[in-house]
Image 1: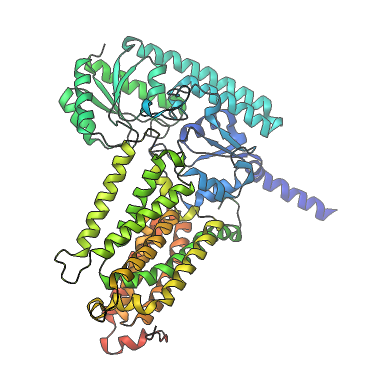
Image 2 (image 1 turned 135 degrees about the horizontal axis):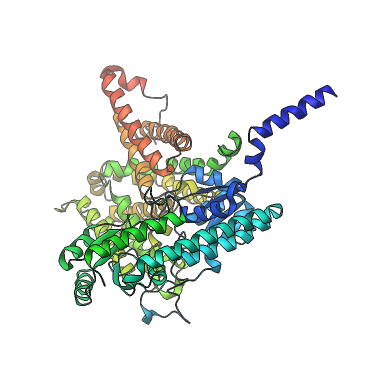
Length: 309
Length: 296
């Protein structure tokens, strides 16, 4: 009897030290920090979430480390951006994790793109004449706050399915995030209102959803195709178009080569703006809402300075 | 780490480690030939030619854009054989252009041609390069098994014709004077070599394959003159460095392939320092490892 009590007391003490709580939390792995931030918003302390790629890394290219496979092995849920963004590195890691839950189609595999607004979708049959197309649409969709909300909503349902007892908790967390995001959207839309319809150029097709959400018009890209360096003719045509349409802003993700953008900036007088597309891209963009605060602030102050209409 | 036992963690690293042993086995051997022939960058060049073949195949309609389609593999193998044919043709007795120059040119042109091919593609080619190049940490057991069987076949082929291959590598002019059809045997050498390199790059990546090929062979040259001793030293070094590299990548959580490459570099520097410190007179004896394979 005494022995049993002693054991119970020891178990309780261990539980108090946080052992049980960590054990009970849903282990979530995400491919990007944006998704990790949204999981943390909805999941709170009922989840232990970690991202594979860091925000300052190009999510198209991630160098696999042993710890990724080990962490995926024990994960309850894997949240991916999808739309072929991670196709270059994720599939073998998932296979090698030997975790049946997180295999594509499994109960712990969650493609965040399923419920969001996807742009650049080719309509109908893809043919050679259409030129450059993304067969499954543009994967940089998280840069629209509306899509952040859709991801959070779908995640609330997913986390609830994994842990029924915490349904009310997740609902409450989602409602809180939804409210703060709506406040943020009001703030961002107000800041961007004077620049409605402003024309910009981006390096990669990574700001399409951002431009859609804040009524900017992307008139061209520095790379003629994703991953292909610009040809002289393409660069010259882009510069002419930028001068003709009086484009003052060129957005570049931090991990792209700055040489060509800087040359275009010199030739056209446009400002080359290095803007983080992901949470963790700069220390100030520590979570999903802070990312937009940082990016909008940077963009608005630059446009003010450049006198963009 | 993440509540896994040591046994479970080692279980994850078992396939990459066995794969690295297979790479050591075949590449240390081929490396001896490559270093002896002085065609150090031939593997990079053949790998790039194979990648060009794969890129073109993916862009053609019959592969339906799948990098792992059988047609992609066969086209890339065909390109490898064309490369092998070129490399076996360019070595003439009185050739004024060094073979290494042609190899370098082939590398540059094949790389650039692959970029041009991708720029003309209609589908997204952003990830093509990564899908063609493997990462040793993500290798699976079936891949390890297939590779082992393939390399065993190549190894047997080279063992049967070891006399021809070795004599050409060690003393090309004398063999040619003796009337052996050197161009034919060179083609067989480069074709089998390209076959191995193409498969290795697909599971381990370009840098790692280059290291397995050249470093053990160069390290062995520091200590031994005969083929048998060089192989013994190369295989020992490759095995020890693979184990150490995989271990370091685990404890320091670094990308596995790059960690093994750097471990190779460090091991080579250490072996060179030891070589300088050991007095020359008894250096030969201490490093012979009791392996006598000079008749191989």
